Image (cartoon, rainbow, N blue to C red; front, side):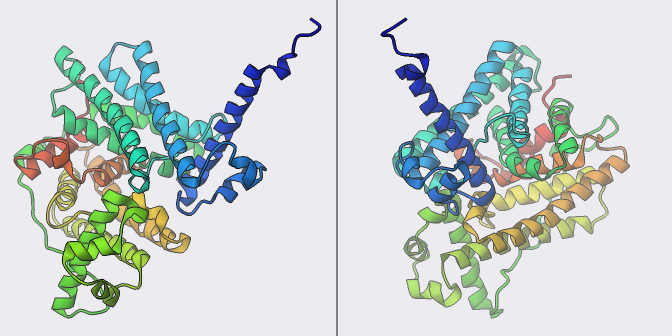
Length: 424
């Protein structure tokens, strides 16, 4: 009709267009954050990939911090939307958990295939401003509470095995943490089967019917402590370096790279800032060596266990429990890979290459168990990566539950990998 605005002039449609552009910006930024890291990605990088000017980008985001926050908020909101969908589709608590995890994989694979948006893995929440950090942590906690709620409903109804629900929920969610990375690295045909392998693992567990190994009945085998590698092997300097590695790792894990202050580390250790620079050139040098120290500990654990006359399930379980012990005792913690994007691309590639070699120890333990008929042939690559995701997320377990005995807590943590969720 004459005098009426066309549909293209409608303010409502302009709002839709604005939101569509915002989604495109967040998706492109998420892809860059997942591959380069938020710290290494500039607003100019994002604008360039979208064919925008940096000035036009400011119409949608105020600062880089705002862009990171919006990307992380979108990622967590997408997880909640997925939980909403599975709740509408089924009343079965087990299927709600598996459906949520399956769709997490599907979202990643859809983005890779050009069928959907990218969502940023919220790796650097610790580096954000207090208000943003607290908001995102609360929303993330709500995901945990919903998943734990499904576990408790299933245990009450008898459809899910009895376990420590808080610990199991932490392990399940932690297992997904690095799927955005390793699914990218898989061949498309293999990645397409990953969701089915994940479902099988968390439904029936890794242990076969012929496996009579029960982790709770086998004592934890303490290993040999690992000394720091350093240019100065003199004992006193080595002890000082290890103190820096442990303190640095704790700060990097809890505050992120940008949020970690060298002054805070020095104050925590009651040393001068000059003492820091005696051992390390800068903060990135400390972070790099924290990764080296963590990987040295992992290598010592894996190589010691690999040399023992144990079957596959025994090696796998003892390795996981040993690492869990380091993560949650004075021996650690190990560095969380959330900070890896703070490293230069060259250093990052070296760390990831060595990490993959270390993860292959777990793969060899799994393959040994499959060959022995004691572990089910679910898919070694998927199982290995899910377990390493959970291991990386296992630090500070005492913030989530009461810990009377650390090794018993480790047994609880890995229970879902060995025995699955489905009640017999």
